[in-house]
Image (cartoon, rainbow, N blue to C red; front, side, top):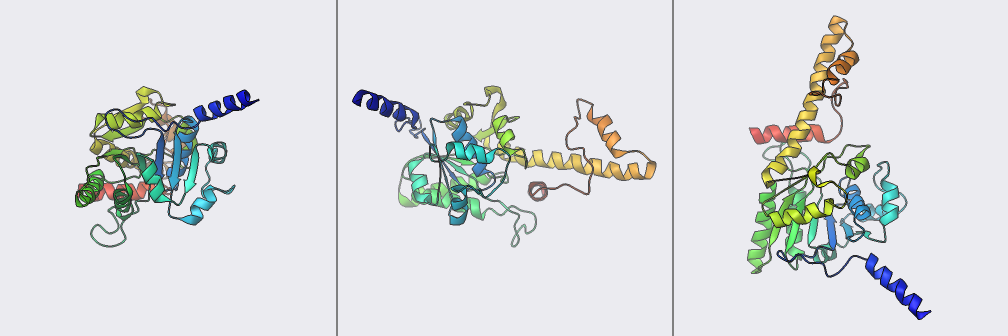
Length: 314
């Protein structure tokens, strides 16, 4: 019947992200999120937000056509246990993957920047400093296509004061264009471990949000509060948030390095490093994690972030 058909359409419209939600003070639309960068961090993070926040539309944009094709296929470009199931549950409903960066920026006022920040291979700081070309390029792209005020969120691991560089790029472009748009920069570092990224996103130890505007911080905190308890959402100033990610990785790498050093002593003295690690790991002040002795520490981030931290200190 037409009544029944009308009811179905009404229910469908309620399920779809509301086009009207707008922040009373900041004037940003709250119904859509865009993430620039469809990599190891952007993909799983946005897929989780889409799953936990069905009222939001989440669009991940990337200029790499092959990568976007794979996100839209059955063979995702990255593997994480549980990721495929989440993407398949949300894709085409409130999770979309696109190469149309311009449209993504125009249609969303909450924009995540989740691009690579490798170690510089040339120039000042070569071999230690973070290469910020990609994150600065995102800033220029947002400035180019922004049609209204935006909240811009650093998701990449970046050195302290990167937000300042992004803010400079955005404000300089805005001034040159003679516009009056506002850009609020937030830092929201990821704390994901390979192999457990989806679990880390589903039940994080903490979500860290740094910023200078409490209203903008609250917008992002409200997104996470859909599934993360409020007492696990930590808010700080911008610089504390940026630095905390580097310090966390340095501390974890330090634990691995320490137990590796002790393993050499164990070999000389007849002690068993696994037994020593278990004995000290039961101390609640120390804890058992990151105490497996090996040849070094693995992963892409520890070395990169430590070199970066050393460079900043010097």
